[in-house]
Image (cartoon, rainbow, N blue to C red; front, top):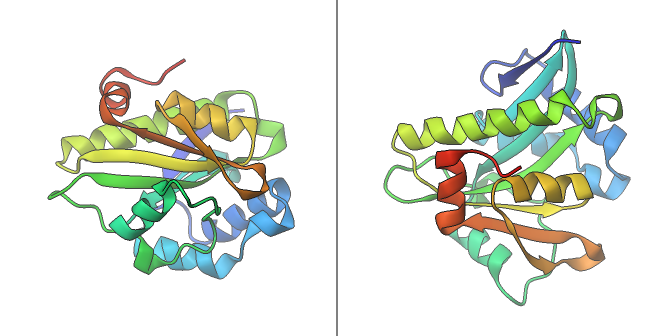
Length: 193
């Protein structure tokens, strides 16, 4: 098995259908969402995917994007316990900005069961770190990374980027946020092991 990584800009045509197929395999029906929303968010921010391939087979992916101030404030409000996921609309997202820190939301990290626990997640984590370092180097400062974890694997992924547990959401999911010096240190020095 020789895995490679691609982005939403370099992936083969039709990769969104493969992403959705993974979602249907690894997530419950209520977390799976609908494919049209994947397309809408991708059209707004095409460099929002890191994808791991085993030959022509999509083994897993990371989906993330910059979010607008309103969504950032909603997610971090102490009295908000809802889970934002497939309902996030492009109007709540933001373009990559040079004039302010970019607040990122990880909407999904999903890996097919047969690829878990090994090279695929390392490739996604290291690929995301390289992506963040490149964006910072191009003048797009990273202000924060947030995500709602629905599994222990999701929690571990967020923690490797310096995220701390913020609150429990409805249905028992957990919200994490990485920001400040801890996030700057990860981007500068590497992932937390």
